[in-house]
Image (cartoon, rainbow, N blue to C red; front, side):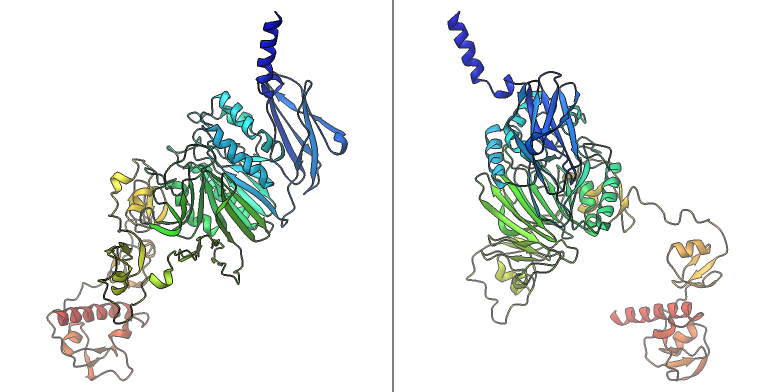
Length: 633
């Protein structure tokens, strides 16, 4: 009997503390604000839990309970203040920890961004241990916290690994595709106590910290189709951007989603709907878009200059990147964007904000920085970029990229591309012998592949990117079979945004293109426009954006193609100079005198005369065009 008792005791001692104690998850910190914070834990059974806090742990609050889940909010706190606290559940007291409230706007703060922590627990633990050393104010997980969101055991592993970090550091999660189960977020929403003030949802929400506003998007569980943002959430996000942009206390706006606007993973090209918002995001003051999903690190720039970061190296198995680069920019033809840094590596991103200044360093699992960059709302004397839309990025000394809003590229000291030297500058005379240059194909801005930079310079063509030019994209093969119609500015309806981008068209609005004149009546009093066309009524004329010339139908087009091309100016009684008498007679105008009109009026000025000369001027230009064509023949 004693032998069996010893075996059982040994097994018990070998078990994790959480298996013996009442608490199996936590305590962990959620939804921190200037005056409050929420504390959460979960137990093996429906126990009673309390949190003691403040000097000498003299204050206490009983956590509300829902089954095994316990949470409570401590309010009435002071901003930028740290407090000790301790959670006890039926005799199981966890070690004393501390929490700190959010700062006032303008006070400096720091946070860590990382994600895709699922599956490989050992690598996840290594990354988390390094993050603990950073001592930041809060952390953001960009999604795929666990391998299976409906598996309780996966969540137990997650909280065991992050236990020491989350006891002292609030965490804001983003929903990943692995965190939900066919749109079901029951476990996820039970575990987390997130701010629902603006959205009424925990899968997507927003929060402010200091002078920054974070908009967390769910393009997974609430997706329109696969991993694309749904429209109600899109409208909510745009409204959040507007409100934050108008708030004088907010200097930085960040958008977070699991799948980013672009992807460097083979077979993916990002969230089409989110990518379609990039101009709105830039105009509304969004600084960066953060994501995970792809298990590597990428810092890139949209075709409009919006910076995006993919930080998916928090522990899951790594993915190769399609275009690996460490500071040498790579421009992608479709969908159009630029990659400045791309590497398959376990990592996290440390970000520091102080007033208008933003400084970030991506660090590997040993805490060694490998890509540092920054921006500020004001141009820096040391080479920082004022991007016009506040989206410029000044990269670090390790070969990063200084990229303005216009997508221009100025590489670092380690041999990156200097766009000013290579992008279409004429070559000096006598330097076009490239026979001694090694073959190193480059793609020109004309879409042609050149043997090397020398032949590109000799052709006086700008550099698009290193390597051969990509073939024209196959839209049917490259785009998903998603029926999500969008209208281009040329009035063409495309099946979805991918097909629109593939055709290099310009996005106008969501939905099929509609006839802007559909509400106009089909009949009415004819009006002649200054474009020489007859419109059935004034509504149709205005809808076409044409200026009225006169009431009634336009005269039939005059065919003066038989007139000679001789230049023998003659002045008509309408005080307009014609090239010759044939053209004047063709216009049914009588001769005033030979030579140019003394007033200087001519066909070139007829269109500017008002009101009756509009139609005449149009015909005059048409005749001039015919004469020009005849000359070219």
